[in-house]
Structure formats: structure tokens, C-alpha cells
Amino acid sequence: MEPMEAPSEQRIIARMKKNTVEELVFSLREYKGHRLVDIRIFTEAEGYTGPTKKGVCFGVDLLEEFSECLDKLQAMAREERGMRNLLQQTFHQDKERNQCK
Image 1 (cartoon, rainbow, N blue to C red):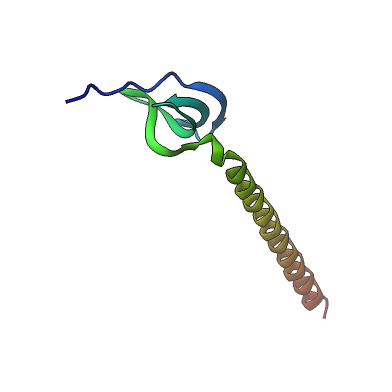
Image 2 (image 1 turned 120 degrees about the horizontal axis):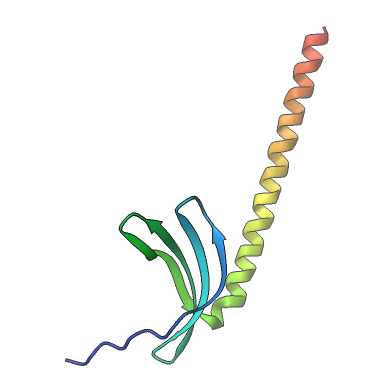
């Protein structure tokens, strides 16, 4: 049986607070000769502090495509937020008109 190869050290690029006990950690690392992007949830819970199984890891060659997908997601979220705001404004305007009659 071959000994397991230990993963190389992660180079943490950024951190983003998710809630009071979790944060997203964005890092680069190398494993078995492959350069990887690792986006993982870290936790600070009673009894354990560190990475969780929740996250995604993929080759750096996919980073540009991943970034484009995030751009599309952000654009769609903005569009939906804009539509929601428009609907709310229309609802309030209709409500005001009906109260004036």
C-alpha cells in the first residue's frame, strides 16, 4: 500500500465572513502536481476550528470560466432584484391610487 501524499500548503488569497461562526476561504494550492483553486467554508465551532467538507475545488485552468459564471449569476441576481423593486413600486403606486378614490 502506497503512503498517502499530503496536500501542499494552501496559499489563502481572501476570506469572506458568511455568518458568526463561518467564513468562506479562497485559496490556491497544489496537489499531486495539479494547481487548484479551493473555495471552502471554515468554521469556528466549539471543539473544532478549521475547514469543513463544504466547498469546491477545481483546477486553475477552469478559473476564467468559473469567473464568467459568477458574472452571469451576479447579473441575474441584479436583474431579479431590479424586477422585484419595480414590482414593489408598482404595487405601492396602485395601492396609493386606489386609496385616493
